[in-house]
Amino acid sequence: MSKYLIEIPHSSHKLECLRTARILLSTGSHFLTNAEWGCHDGEHKAWFIADVATKEEALMIVPPYYRHNTKVTLLTRFTLKEVEDELKQFTV
Image 1 (tube, rainbow, N blue to C red):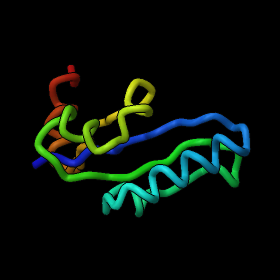
Image 2: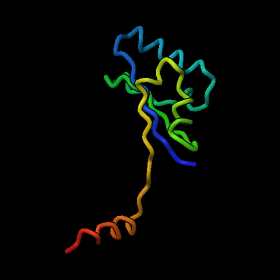
Image 3: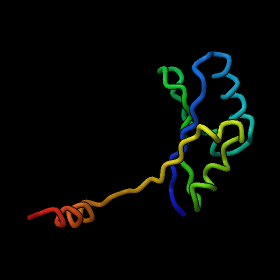
């Protein structure tokens, strides 16, 4: 499994914002009902993290209407050793 950050943007219009929240919350999806929202800070997006096999699988969690604007990002955690080993390639 891989970990993906899913970002679902929506209009800043108050009615659209509320409709989006209602749609996501009423899906029954554990991911969508536990999304984090930036609306109260002017960032009209919902975010959640999903452990799934592929980006396509992550996108399928999102209701169809929102998929075309949804951003799915593979998350990676680095260790200091990994970074230091990679940096050695750039040392002269």
